[in-house]
Length: 93
Image (cartoon, rainbow, N blue to C red; front, side):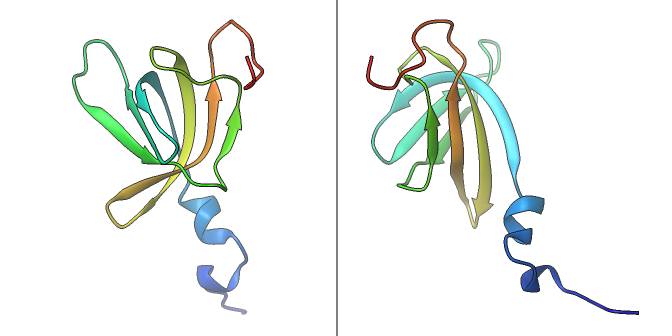
């Protein structure tokens, strides 16, 4: 029987540690995205954005978004952010 640790598989930690969430954008900057999961829930979630974060569509305050992320220590690192608004999907508009 062959034993393989997760650390030896390329990308396995990210694959098994990836989470997903939806919410409305409370604030956004070049390096941080803050969402609220629902109007009832007061808790905000803060995500680190970096050059590797995939972005789909125009993302603005108040827009619904879906986020894939990993945890690194106490930080939530966004790996992908997609706008769920019915408006323009181009990030240039």
